[in-house]
Amino acid sequence: MTAALRVLDVPADRMEGEVVAALFFEDVRPLRGAAALLDWRLNGRLTDMILAEEVSGQAGEHVLVADNGKLAAEWVLFVGGGSWRELDPGRYREALRHLLGVCSNAGFSLVSICLTAPAGIAPNVLEQELARALADLPGKRPECLLTFDDDDPSAG
Image (cartoon, rainbow, N blue to C red; front, top):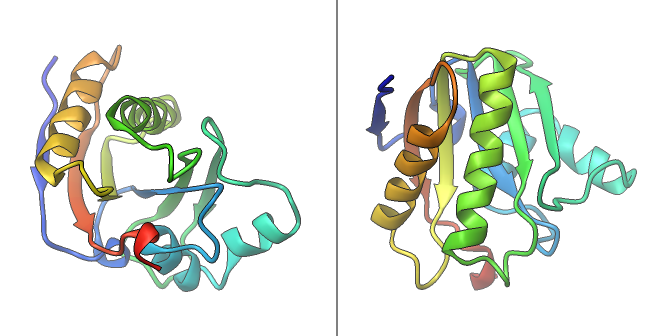
């Protein structure tokens, strides 16, 4: 079964779909990139959870939050990406597989994803990794919209 993957040039908070997803990392504080933008639009919901030590950004974590009327998507999915400093294509691939698995299990059919390309990993490589993870997803695959954020957490 084939699912579509389209690349857009839209900020995370304006991405349409049932859910918009972004990674957050255990060694990036304050939040940066799409996670920071979405958290801000959600009045700091993820930041509050981090401060309460409910989540940290470890690989395998995920938080699903309903839109509060400030986003184009109905839901926001924050997925723990582990350590930004140790992120390589393999770890990024695993985070994307987890993200897609959560979306698939939740029954989402239109998923918007905003990714940041770490230094040394070109955006087209991440697009290919997402396409592979999507192709490997069992069952019904969602349509995916993809955009890139250039707010590199290692730059600040």
